[in-house]
Image (cartoon, rainbow, N blue to C red):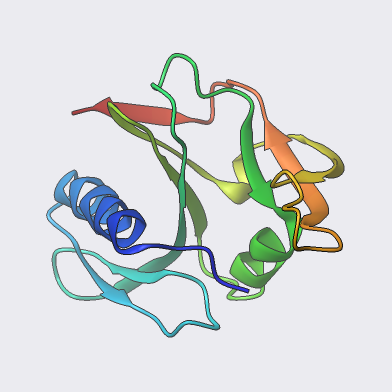
Length: 136
């Protein structure tokens, strides 16, 4: 089930644009059943895959950073520099999956009244040296 609204997709695009601007790169949006983006360097060479997650908090308040375990597995299955980018109200936080550590627990969205269970296996990342951020 997809929960992304048009405003979420705009935030996602803004985040990836800011991320690739750091190294004069570019990106390509992938399909709805794939990870979010292919990331290219300034010479148009594929260098990474990225998943962008929305976080309705400031960079300072964003931790721990959540992401569904299934998303991380799908990203890592690409085998090329998996990067997670969290877009916050005032900036982005990112890190390479293989350089970060986190905790695993059942969680995610608060179950809705019309749903049996919106919870799933989640990863949570605390602030760490492997993460970088850029304020807007």
